[in-house]
Image 1 (cartoon, rainbow, N blue to C red):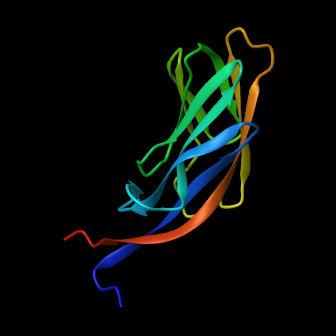
Image 2 (image 1 turned 60 degrees about the vertical axis):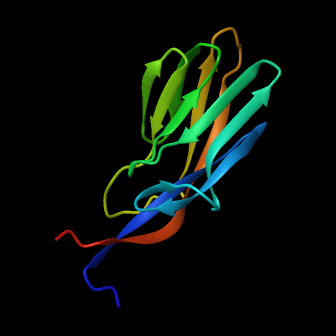
Length: 139
């Protein structure tokens, strides 16, 4: 029995793509991504002879994906959410939208155009349902 608590649905994204590898995992903790052992990928690296990108999952409730590159990024687009340019070398994809409806199972794409690269890099994501976590009630 959970007296004085409330639950929150928690979702995460798992990315996939050619030459994309998970470099760090975490566990859910208090509405964000905690440290320590876990199963949720929170950082990825994409390494190719002409490309080096990192994808870091934010620990806030809206869980953005920050993309960084040592080469200037020309543009980033996504089929779900919105994209914000932080600098010529960093973009953030906001894929999550608050509300009662789960987006679990939804697939989306992130297209990254780099300076001096003819073809865009395409990374796919699937929104996965992790489960629920519980907060003490606000008193």
